[in-house]
Length: 302
Image (cartoon, rainbow, N blue to C red; front, side, top):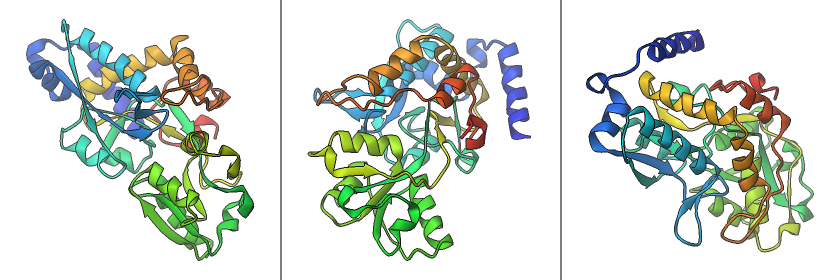
């Protein structure tokens, strides 16, 4: 019922173009200040991170800038200042809810639980929760982690999935938390943890950027079906979501999204010229044909 209700609200908003004196919520804030604040990650390669020139770059950042262009056009602004605020897995939702950031441009899983606190625009990536470990340990399935020390990042879907699987399967795992992805991977590198549970694309990025990628393997066993990533925005702000959804729908249904995707996943990326060699999966291509903010993995053919 939620999706029918939201769809109806968005349809109504689309039918009534906003006048400057009728603006509300985030659009009014942006119009009044002449600025928008993006919540960005400093180490979520290749989605949102700081490069060697101390510039925030990435796949999600490029998408957010397309949204910014749409907002600028919608509000008929000659210029729109773009501010950036670093967020973490633990702070991203609170900073969105309290108005500090207007869009969160990173690698945030869109799920039904989070939709109680924030909204998401159309899905821009699909990923499954797996683990990375050293090949020498020969760990490949979730049950192989029995009795091991396993780390994930505080405030993520992944650490919740790890904790639930540990209890449900009586695995006796020592669950450890890290503040971010690099710290968690370092714990595997230094043998403080046998494995690190995270979205598989982020694990691939960490392996590619490690000192010796040949030492590591990503598990076949998964803690989830492929789950959607989305750009976060404030909940219950229908006019703003209408503009953001329009921007992402236009982008995802155009050839440009393939170019942006290939730039970050199929070509060398700064600062070290790493290439992740992750072609766009069929499930994501299908999702782009009919853009959706649905949090249910099953809706994406997962």
